[in-house]
Length: 105
Image 1 (cartoon, rainbow, N blue to C red):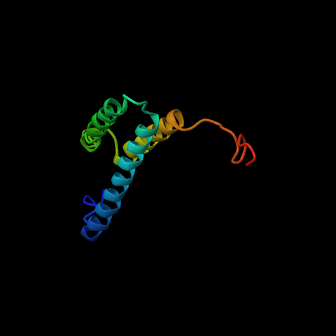
Image 2 (cartoon, helix red, strand yellow; image 1 turned 45 degrees about the vertical axis):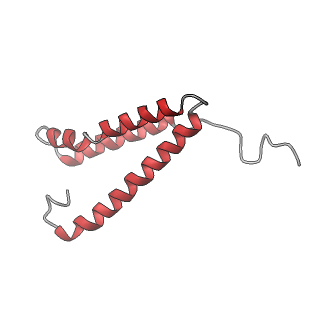
Image 3 (cartoon, rainbow, N blue to C red; image 1 turned 180 degrees about the vertical axis):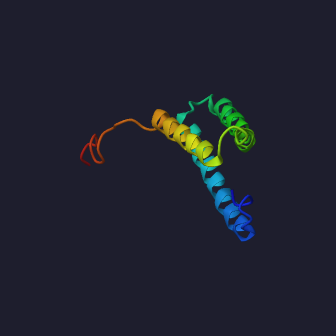
């Protein structure tokens, strides 16, 4: 969107922010994989995580193809809805309140 609007001065700040966000998401995902993996499953689950991560690199291409059918704001809104649905599906469920379930020391 920044390149389309011809606001060239926004390209570098946007690239920095998006690059940092990608790095944080990658590290957070790897930490979650490490928490989920059992003793012998870490390598396999890490490989699956990276495979899905690389498939995600196709998202800008898919959005560019979709731009022939719909506007970018609609496509990005749909992407946001998918991201929220995914977060709701894989997010932590209700658990004990902080401090509950601990025995006194």
